[in-house]
Image 1 (tube, helix red, strand yellow):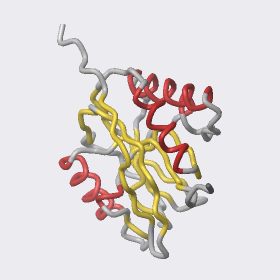
Image 2: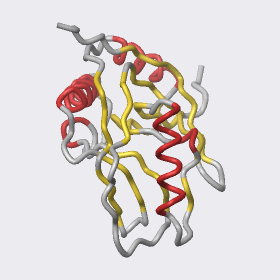
Image 3: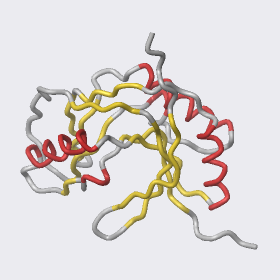
Length: 183
């Protein structure tokens, strides 16, 4: 029996509501020259982009992610950036926190070991960022005076649904991170 259509998936971190509010406000403030602001519900940090997979591969991805053991951590976005070739305005980290680097590296390693082609910008080469707007023009980038952060207690397997105006995302499964020792 043939499997249903392929699904476009990735692993991500979702900011909490407070961080989403700050990121959305920042995007509105900075993207004054047109372009397309990211919808608050679509703000995320990609851990590993997998791409098109079959429904049975989604089950395999869930099993792989369920076996990843990493600590919960605090994430602080303390840098603004702009990629002019694609007009992408983003908020990111000056230095990738060790727990984020570890989580992304473990996940990418397990995915590659299972035969999935994970994009090179995933895993240890991760440039952690949250896209705020696309197709914008920026002539200068202000400093992010107050970092935007949240407690990362889980990561998610997410499916992309492409639409003419923008993509939307659906969380297929979430995977808790271990609580750090309070000691």
